[in-house]
Amino acid sequence: MVKPVVVLKNIEKIYKDGDKKIKPLKGISIKINGGDYVSLMGPSGSGKTTLINIIGLLDADYGGNYELNGIDTRKQNDEELSKLRSEYIGFVFQDFNLINEYSVIENIKLPLMYSQKKVADTYIRKITEQVGIANKLDMYPQNLSGGQQQRVAIARALVNKPKIVIADEPTGALDAKTRSEILHLLSVLNSKGITVLVVTHDDYVAKQAKTHYEIHKGNIKKT
Ligand SMILES: Nc1ncnc2c1ncn2[C@@H]1O[C@H](COP(=O)(O)OP(=O)(O)OP(=O)(O)O)[C@@H](O)[C@H]1O
Image 1 (cartoon, helix red, strand yellow):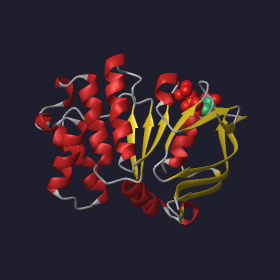
Image 2 (cartoon, rainbow, N blue to C red):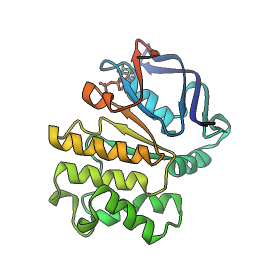
Image 3 (cartoon, rainbow, N blue to C red):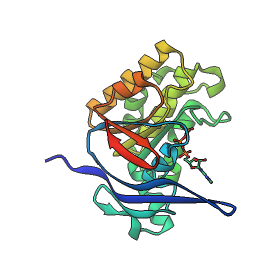
Image 4 (cartoon, rainbow, N blue to C red):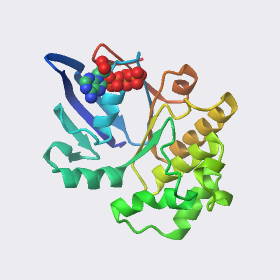
C-alpha cells in the first residue's frame, strides 16, 4: 500500500497586519502519497507560499494538524522540527538560492552540515551525475548558466535523501528549453520514488505532475 508522506488536516493560517487579519488558508486538508508528483497552482496571493512553508516545516505558527511521514509534527519542538526538515525535505527555489562564495560541491554539501548526516562520497557523485553537473564541481555559481545553477540546487535538495522535494517556481527564471530539461530531471527523480511538490503559475509545468491542486480564496481543490 502507498503510504502518505504528507497529511494535512484543517490547516488554517492567520497573518496579522496591524489591526487587519489576513486568513490565506481556511482549513486545508490534503494527503500527498509517497511517490506522487503534485502541482499546486493558484492566483498571486492565494496562499501557495504560505502552504508550502507549512509543509516544508519553515512555519509552525498555524492551526490544524500535520503528519509528515507518519510523525505528528505538532508535537515536535523547534529543534526536532529542524531535524525533521533536513531529514525529509529538499527545497528548490525559483532563483536557485546558491551561495556565490561557495563552489558547486560546497553548495551541494551544505545541508549535510545542518543535518550532520554522513553520506557516502559515492552517493554524492551519483547525484551530481544524475543532475548533470559532475564536471562542474569546482566551479562557482556565477560562472554557471541558470539551468546549471538549478541543477546544483536540485543536487543540494537531494543530498540528505529527502522524502519530498518542494520546488517553488523551479523554472520561473529559465528559458523554454532549459525549463524542459529541468522538468525532465524532476520527472526522472520522481520515477525513482522521490515525492515532488511543485508550485507554479505555468500550466506547462503543472502538466508534468500526476496530481493537481488549485488553491483559491483560502480553499484547495483537486483539478
Ligand atoms: N508575513 C506576512 N504578513 C502578512 N501577510 C502576509 C505575509 N505573508 C503573506 N501574506 C499575505 O498572505 C496572502 C498569501 O500570500 P502567499 O505569499 O502565500 O501567496 P502566493 O499564492 O504564494 O502568491 P504568489 O503567487 O504571488 O507568490 C497574501 O494576501 C499575502 O499578502
